[in-house]
Length: 304
Ligand code: CP
Picture 1 (cartoon, protein in one colour):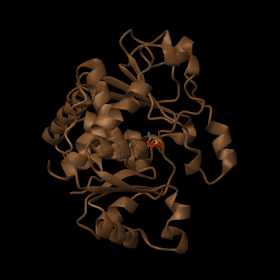
Picture 2: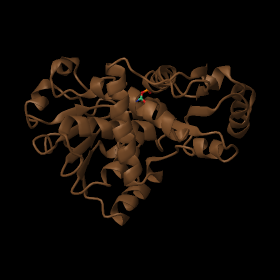
Picture 3: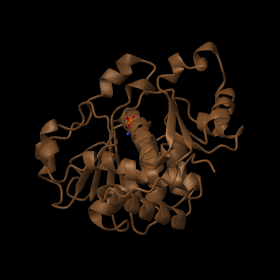
Picture 4: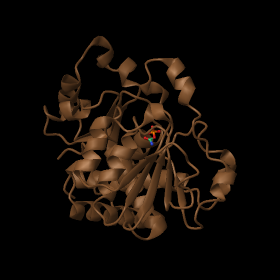
């Protein structure tokens, strides 16, 4: 079984993953983790930089008793540099490993790789398309922080056009009732036409805005995103929009008392570091939750 997109899941599967992640969190807290993946080898191959996703997957595998083989900076240090295709890379890794965690800058590339092997491949982010394990850890975070996944208002702020975290989290949240989305971006980074059509065709409740102030008092989740320099072909275009939205303490004062601030990280300038000490700043707790969800996902692909 491959994990390619959050669109592949049914609600009951998502609920099981959330519940398994909670078990994993408890087992780590109690220092009582079962070595259910003993004897397995997990390959982590990243054609784009990563801190959280790669290292939390490796930690998840090790905590569950698996061994890892890892290729970071695979664009330069794997045989992709010599011209090997993503399909041949997947075929090779499936000769060595029992599951493959893969990140690549090209949208759709992980799905392409998955077509040539039965070895489970987990999409660790494919360009601006999907980052399903991030979407699931975001959902787990919202459930933990708010105690519910329905009747929520969620504002995504920043690079709406290129956000794979948005594309992964929105389909999950729409499995629950009465969730409303605000997409706040500079005009250069608004939703793509195709994604807007998807939202409209699926009856998803959303508004597009270019002003952060309008939504602050209404939202339960303020989800900041980085303007992704790596998705721009022209650096001048990036410079023009990179600091469009910077969250400051004066904004936090306008949020509801139980609202949370999320960010997939890494951040550049978009959240003032002064906010880190706020109890509503959930982004480091969010990153920590990635470990529990990735443990649950590794077990899931082995039907354990
Ligand atoms: N959120 C996230 O994917 O972080 P990394 O790029 O560090 O893996």
